[in-house]
Amino acid sequence: MSKNPTETHRDLFGIESRIKIVPLGGMREFGKNMTAFQWGNDIIIVDVGIGFPDEDMPGVDLIIPDFSWLKNQKERVRALFLTHGHEDHIGAITWFLREHKVPVYGTAMTIKLVENKLDDSGRGARDQGSVIKNPDLHVVNDGDRIRAGAFNVEFVHVNHSIADACALLIETPAGNIFHTGDFKIDYTPVHGLPIDLNRIAQIGSDGLLAMFAESANVEIDGFSPSEQIVGETFTELFAKIRGRIFVSTFSSNIFRMQQIITAAEQFDRKVAMVGRSMLNAFEAANSLGYIDFNKDTIIDIKQINNYLPQELVIITTGTQGEPMSALTRMAYSQYRDVAIEEGDTVLMSSSMIPGNEKAIYRVINELFKRGANVIYEDLADIHVSGHAYSGEMALMLNLLKPKYFIPAHGEYRHLYHHAKIAESLGVKQENIFLLNNGDILELNNQHAEVIGFTEAAGVLIDGSGIGGIDDLVLRDRLLLADDGVVAIFIVIDSTTNYLAAEPIIEAKGFIYESEINQVIKICHSKIDNFVEKANRKKKGKNKNLKDRIDSGQLHQQIRQVLFELTKRRPMLIISTVELYL
Image (cartoon, rainbow, N blue to C red; front, side, top):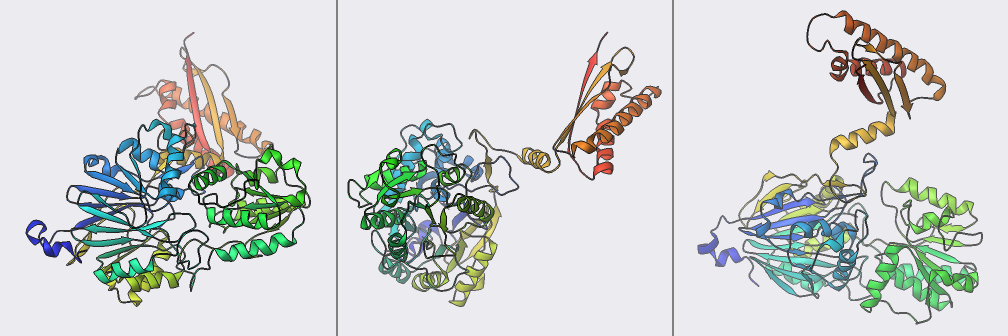
């Protein structure tokens, strides 16, 4: 492997040849990871994930990367490479493949999850995969190298909270780039081998131009615990619990699933699973031979009434308090096949994603009300992270020794702290880039700089999955949620230019019903005054009453009155009808 192919091809590329790196998602945020790498007329894409909406995005189901930068370069896109199968790395693939018919490369579990998405013919925002015909999917193994235009891409084994996660070594004519994907260092993984530190060290010894690295847990010192610790905790807890055991966990974490099944078998319990994503992940992992269990251990959820409480373990989705998840619906007795009962124990085997705390604690409270005993991360070691801590990040930097460093996968503070670690380990400050989504970074062995930017704010998707939602729609939704709506219906007699009837005024979500009558009375008076003034004006444009109202004059006056009376700014809708009698 050449340390820097530019050095051996100066006549072809020249010493000033550079590669472009364009993050289209995953910078200064969690989610919608997507990065483009360009050399001349060749572009490859790494990951194409979804993000999740903030609380100021009502009605938005998910966010996908903005593909605008690729729109006029479709013929240059050579391939899509996937680091692993989490939604924030593959979730937007259905939208991407509609526009870009390119080969897709990923490991076995990753491609299996992609196939599940592409086989889905539902109507939800994420369920549009069946419209993509004959996708060009390729399963690769650790160590495989794929040629894509000017690029060679090697899959390097890492540990994460999903099977078959990989980092990528991207060989380019300008030098080699290492993309960590999501990773941790686990010397005793539940399934498969430890991270391939030998290969990673060799890549560093060969010379590395740039490192693109995740930063999620940079604020936590030391090294992340092994997944096996959770299995030991399950064994201890299962030995003590006498009733039914419910375990909520991320559906894609088949290592956690395996340890739950192993502990259940140890204590002669049957295992049932609930939640669509949980069942899909189990079927995908089982089809690949990634889960070991006795044939009679797994039962259908409809069979649980055939067993005593102490003979059951139920694995469920709903770790983040999602309203439609199986655990939430069970907590509120809205799940058809099973409900939480007194004497049940619920193990919340996951971390709380920032922003979800209220929803999670709401479900936990409801579970306690139902008489269940709830054990979560604060009370026992029933979860470990799939992301590296700061010590693991430092080790990777020491092994790879990149010239340029680009922290990714985190909010600004995470990127900042990761950059500080790199600087403390010898990476020059001017060679560290805290990029925004859409920044266009050009680099080679001599120089690196941000030369421009492209649109990469993300595309908001609602339940239809048909198209994006613009800022005006969001603004209206927020306005409705905050201050409600006032609708005024006005009928005008065209022959007299006066009102044909008293205006109808309706208010929803605005103020208390006991206060609305006085406000409506004042609005009626304001409308009457407006009509009188309009008819006194003999000259000028818009002397027709309907034209005056439609011009927005009355809208501004009523809006001002409403604010003066209530200190609120509801959405105001004024409709006019003109009668010709």
